[in-house]
Length: 339
Ligand code: NAD
Ligand code: TYD
Image 1: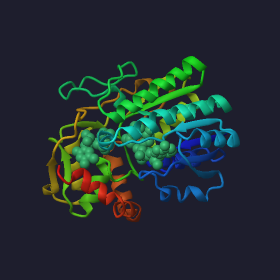
Image 2: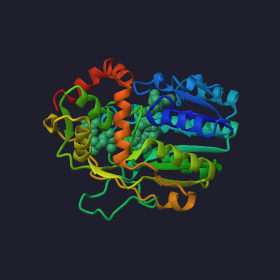
Image 3: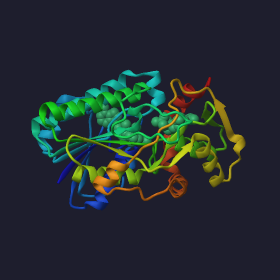
Image 4: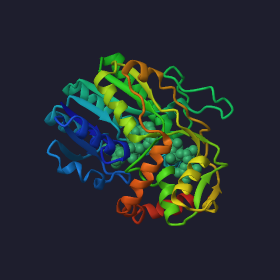
């Protein structure tokens, strides 16, 4: 089996590479990544030592490059993680989200049609369903929930999902989609809530919480997400969408306070800042379909996973310090300076 993992130098793509090398040691994996600000080859340092893994730098929206690669490698499965993934950046500059997330997805699927594959898998997000009200804890996203996006990011992901389903219906491309809730774990880029809070708290810096901190996210440990994708690419039904989540809902304020407690840092570091525009209130996944059809269920609760994650950041300081000492510093100034 030869698998193309796009976005392999990013957070979830990197974790997926390690998951597959460990769980399918006979598979060959080609990691494709453009190495944007979010891509980090240091994440793949260990994988590079494995003869079953190789890396290629390129843009999923570059048709010539993608076709050349597919012609040469003859992939069996393509798993597309490559994306612009940060909501705040999409609010400032939507265009690159449309190019990578929508156009890039269509170029990859065109290559799949041209050169043939057994499965194209699209890694999507629960954000395509929009948000749920805070006062209705009985409501969850199912696969039947209408697409109803809020941000340029989620709109671009929804656009890609619709294209994936259209390629299945129109061309018979063997596709699957997973829509997962918020992930956390090792190699998470420190512009996202959990690694941002860990890294800033360790430096005794102020911790920006948007609005009142009451927004709710449904957190899933990244390895559980990788296990779900593994099940779907092997046993999921073609043309189907599977929601992935583990009923680990927390308000942002709860998450921040948990991290502070674990690190022994004071809550006085918390600073409430101007809310995100169009800020989604609550995400919550109903994972019944993937649980009953494919026998997937998460193994790591939030309480355990957050401790493991904090430990990882404590023992891999070089990995994230290299990021926050680089260009990222300018990003933080620009995004939070006047907030
Ligand atoms: P990330 O930003 O950490 O990684 C994205 C990777 O894609 C980076 O390595 C980047 O260099 C690469 N990339 C960007 N543009 C590219 C292009 N044009 N060609 C090739 N590579 C390109 O993101 P992530 O958090 O790992 O998310 C991965 C996927 O999972 C995304 O599709 C995202 O929408 C989805 N997702 C993320 C979460 C989450 O909580 N992080 C939850 C559900 C779904
Ligand atoms: P984020 O990690 O950006 O993921 P997403 O927006 O895709 O859910 O943000 C998670 C939540 O944390 C979201 O409600 C926004 C909030 N947040 C803050 O309060 N402060 C921050 O500095 C960041 C980055 C996010």
